Image 1: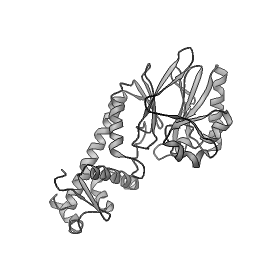
Image 2: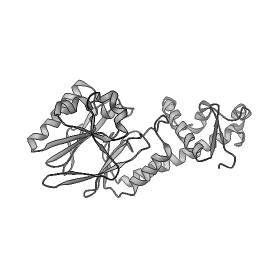
Image 3: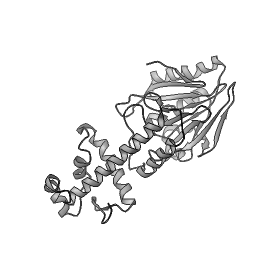
Image 4: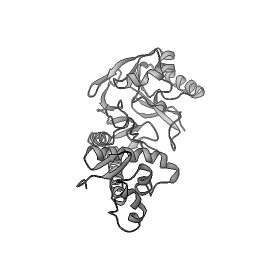
Length: 304
């Protein structure tokens, strides 16, 4: 692993070990800008990695660069584990979306969010080649999720919207599958040249990846609908025999739907798959295509 790593003019990456979900093991931080620099993703909570990250950040000064702030894409622990520490050590403010502020209190303590970034605003960084970063509020994975787009160069810092390794979890406790898909469509339409994810390598031709993510989620949604049909005894054959008890009780639980909807997924990943299943079901429920009653799910009449 090379770190720091030059990505493009005025863009540098530093991958730090974090307590993230496998198969990822690191979270990428990015230095954006020429003379003025915005650091994105103060991620690591580990002391040895913090020392290395801090040395990288301080080394920017030897290049004639000045850190103006640290920005977080969202509040998850593998993205903000060093936020309070780095802000104090470097003497710079934290920038985040307004939705992040209440979620960060347990991480940042007395260090407040100094600037609340909003969708569409532009962060301007001075330098030999000035950089203008458009802020994109992209909820779905998390309510406070932000991306940063250098429109001139087509470079998109995309946090946890997609990954260069593994996939993205939509946790129904704070995620929203419908919103996530809508934001993926939005990102796909930007025409970005390269996407810089929080986990994994830079992504060339990001539009194609965004559309693959959308297609995969649509495929999984269809599998969920088929699992609901099987639970109602509509599938015929083995599915009907397996799910007859669920049908007689007016639907199926998540545990009963999971082996059908995620039959192609390794058993070790089922705890994560269960969360995604619930996120899909909530989306279908809001669309009038699924019904929930007392912890059991069934397909809505005429819901398709």
